Image (cartoon, rainbow, N blue to C red; front, top):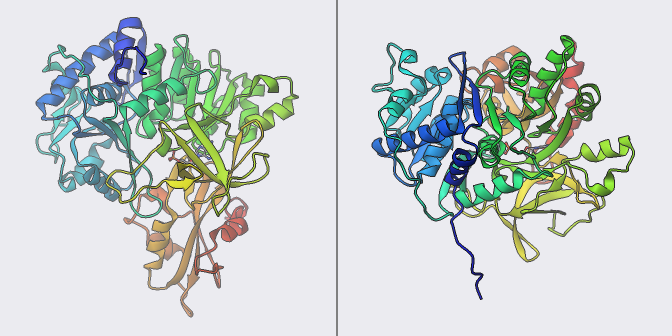
Length: 546
Ligand code: AMP
């Protein structure tokens, strides 16, 4: 017997309609690439998103067409979030920090038809435009006055002209909630990047769950400033959840340094923010060295890589800002677990509570998780036993775009997504990441694929073997360190090998240093035992004498 309730597909456009109808006067404030502060309301956002939906149709965008963006956090990007997905097309957010070759590969793989980009990225897009084989329209996200006098891109279009030339008379279409809404590529640590294709259903369910008080906790009384970029896993869902609850939204644009962020926090009365630890380090340095205080900030969500307990302490004890530690992945839309205490834990001592909050946290309802050993057997939730972390749920990837085979593994009665992280889970369900089974290097919250770096080094005629591992760095958390075995008799220098990377990868991927060794330890199957190197050289960059 079926229930007798209305059935409406779960669609992203419902958030915008809700924001317009019930929070029409609420503000969206953006620091623009042009340098000034722009402010308008959710009602304005909705009207311009409808205009853009009409403009997209005029460009030939159809349901399922991929529309790429390369943009900072800002109101025009938000308009694209809603106009592209809301009209049934797929929003593909490109990460500008990738090497241009990767940008080309990803845009081609996604078959992007239109590419919208901020002026910051004009030189990058100009340098790759001729290689983007599927892109038919290039749109610069500025008004007429900020269009360049000339560009190597023929028929470069102007965002504000598109908006001005389109009607705001548009009905958001209703379609199957399982249709694709947006696309985000993982950093591709083993070979090519992988496309995670979110659906309207997965995104809407993720939005409802992530806004809960025990998750990222957003409400109509909040002013939210997502520092986490809209090109990285949909800015952890804030562009959707803020509209869903009617929170004031503040976008930092390209200004991610401590001083710019602090200024916006104070001038706009920000209560909640979210980002990776490196960003918060910059903010704390600024606040500490200038003797400043936060007058409105209540909490900040820290994730993407592990939040150091000392950072949590400084935020809470010195500045009265609650830190919420969260874990997630591109493959999870991204929210998986959040470190918020249970009621039964509130009576614990301060140090006991801190120890729990330092963990990555409890799974949000809608995500199930477990840890298993190498044979796939379930491991106990004792807070001590570490195993491979598996997850399943409404907003977890099933297949990568155009990939053969599924990444899922059978365990017990269900199929699970292997996260590649190694973790413990305690009796209260708090998960703690102890290691990554992947060998990626996390620099300032961004991944650097070690295999790419090794392959380049090993293409040098004087290198026999090379391993790249993350070494501890005071500012970036980790930086790549290259461990090299030279050909017998070769004197190839550190400088020459570092110079060998020039032009082959994004500059910030270049290893910070090189160590020459006689041999790299190998495992039974001939694979390099990189965890041994990591242990050996973990403090190398902080202890080296320059
Ligand atoms: P991404 O898909 O780029 O968001 O990266 C996901 C990976 O980042 C996870 O598999 C973890 O290895 C790592 N990660 C995310 N959040 C945390 C956290 N709070 N602590 C430690 N590692 C994290």
